[in-house]
Length: 190
Image (cartoon, rainbow, N blue to C red; front, side, top):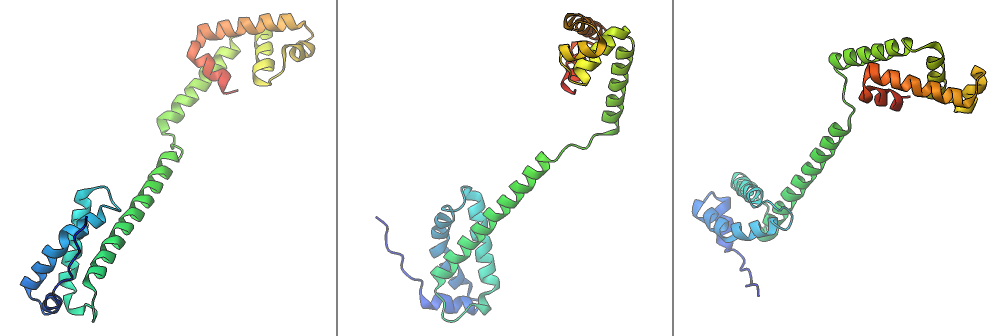
């Protein structure tokens, strides 16, 4: 069961407006814990809520001379805490959205990446050039142009089985020359 919150002494508010530190301290002690619990409804970090509430009291002291008349201090302070918490939540959302965009942005290849890609492409070209003509033709028709064995056989004027054998020979030689991983990479890129 919650105990009722007594309103602050009207003299506290007037004393605050006039710069009375004792009145300010009375307001601080009366509201600090309540505002902290209220801020925890919005934010899960107790230290962050504590910092927001403390900053609120600093602003209250700094703006004491310009506080509105009449003033419902409880509503004023609770609204200020809520607004500060919501502003912090919005800040987190913006930061998180920005972080997601940064993480999703394609990586810019470095000069080293370009050099390695160029070297890899050159190794593949050399390995393909080293294949016997029939192996190279069967491999390129089926892997680069995407033809079926039957379509490649028609184009080459041989049987589909011959195309299959030539592609198998090509893959075997490429694996020997390039290694398994590079052949798989080459096949996936086609």
